[in-house]
Length: 209
Ligand SMILES: [Fe+2]
Image 1 (cartoon, rainbow, N blue to C red):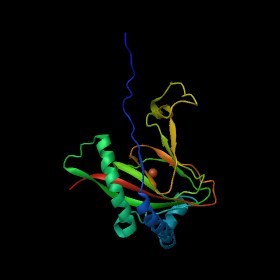
Image 2: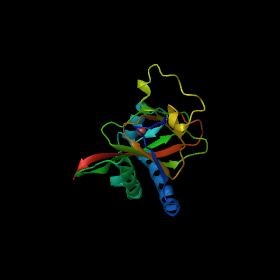
Image 3: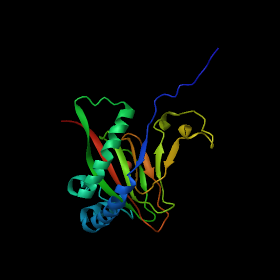
Image 4: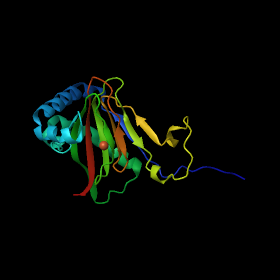
């Protein structure tokens, strides 16, 4: 008698890195702009004081950065081929619609700032590009989307393979990025370092046209 195990209902995560030649000119410009935005964006600083303690995010203020900054637009262009590749891997049928980057914002996490567990409602695909990642800064912690259905299941062994862990942390590396389906819950633990962890997050919507 033969037996086997099928591993169904996968949660693909796409990670990549901007090409080195491109990175050398793009990343310093993005870093400057992220810091400049914090200095200029009063509404963002106000919102962050209440919702992102200690840090700065332009999530509720300057959240179309790819449409107002050539450097952010360049980042969007560089990501486009990767998004297309991920869509092929997910085997999505986009029909007559397409994926479009609708939101793109800056996150600056000084020491002590964390980013609580959340997902990105309404969007199809989301992701983060890393601008500045001091050594030892927190990665992106992803949650098994079935966690709330485990009920009486025994816990996984501490040495369980990555695909069986209820939480997986992807390291944050400047110049790198991660793409995931927007329903996947994730968080960033508190930054323990003196240096700031700076990232750019974005959403893609599935829209007609
Ligand atoms: Fe997020």
